[in-house]
Amino acid sequence: MIRVQAEDFDIAAEMEAIASHSTSLGAIASFVGVVRDMAGDGGPSSMTLEHYPGMTERMLREIDEEACRRWPLEASLVIHRYGRLEPGDRIVLVVTASAHRQAALEACAFLIDWLKTKAPFWKLEETQDGSHWVEARARDDDAAARWDKE
Image (cartoon, rainbow, N blue to C red; front, side, top):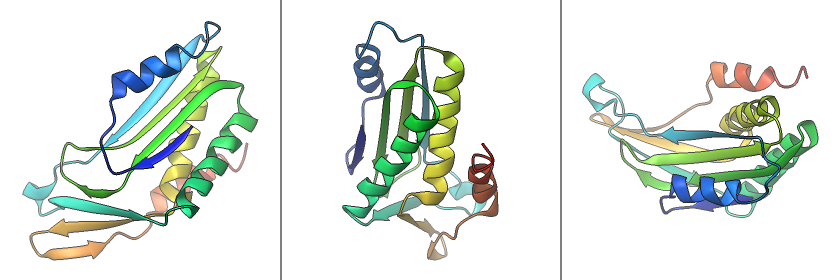
């Protein structure tokens, strides 16, 4: 399941919904991305995430479908927020469920690595000196590239 939304999400409720999906689940893996507070170091005091409605959901669905092709998942969930976010706000939730932990853990890592590089979101960081658009980072590309080898 894919959701792109401005409002926050309830981690416990989302995890419970996945857990109640099937009694054959042996593992549920999750990742929650949170806005870091780096304002004291001259870093961003807030950020705004923008996306292209329709295209973003389609791309997230493709990434999720790829994870389901690679691993025997019984359920998966990707929630990604957009809009203005402050330090401590949740940005993204990725949940994967499988009969076995390795599949759940690997699929979860795959999804977050690919989301960082392939999902069409644009990040505007606000600092004391103004605001700037964040460029793609080589380390994110490297993390996603490791899955191309498999």
